Figure 1 (cartoon, rainbow, N blue to C red):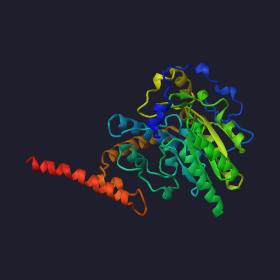
Figure 2 (cartoon, one colour):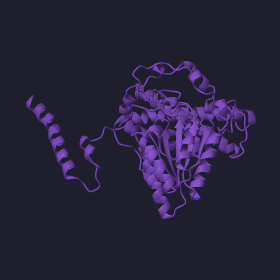
Figure 3 (cartoon, one colour):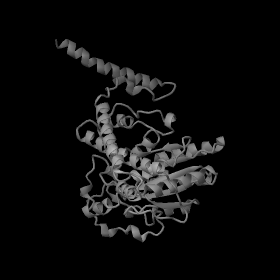
Figure 4 (spheres, rainbow, N blue to C red):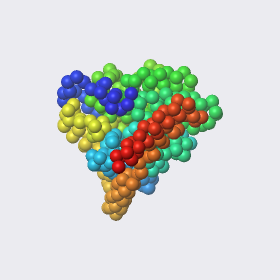
Length: 386
């Protein structure tokens, strides 16, 4: 199923706004790992500690700001008709940058279609992410160059790919790890359950990173599970942990720990990053049809970028010159994204049939010939009309 067909399948028959009172407040979850409060105050956790330099902290902030700027530009380009669709990560920057910066170069990433921040951490040029959404390619990067797989549109299937890859890593005797990203909605898919089973039984070095952004399109989390998502790991025989997904420091520390555990041969871990999708599921979605405004307002106060900025300023790790320079860099990035997208050439129509099979296919050859003849018929008609 595609993103849009899945959306249709999950839409409730009669959408209604849900009040924020239906959800447990974050403070009622004592198991939440947090190192930076929503007010920007640094706190400690008994199981997860992290010691970062001022340069590293500024680097995390820069990552989140530039990722959000790129995401905003992509959303604007879709509204202007330059992209067919876009899945925004607005509000999930800390979960993606924190986990992305925990990876080693030899680790391998299996993303969904929303991991723009992780792609940034892996060194993928952000403009390469847009070709698929513009309809000019199937993904604009070589997965082996950055150990970052192509975006996966089918909901949840990448967790199986990650598990199989991780099983291969273990058999090869490598000490690298694999991470699979998915959302709370995907956690209801059978593919995810199967990947949990296989990874546990075969002790695969994989981290399942679930970005619980509270909404599977229009379905709230409580319509999908009776327990916190991270607790599902217990039934499969491996640990799960819930982390404040708007806390970039906690996401970095928890993911780093889970990856190290995988490298030691101790098997999979489920990380639930408890965050919030500030915008629409995709640009074809209207969250005002099913989500209350006060819920979003409550989560805006927990903004991951704002809380790190507050900490940087209060601790003296960044000055106004740093923020001013970053604003200028952000605008430069936005301009480059606009220019590159609008200059993307349309693909040759017959290239549609390339790269389907490594050794070719007689059926594909036949279909290519039929499509070529169909296209040629338009040229013939135009010639006859002269």
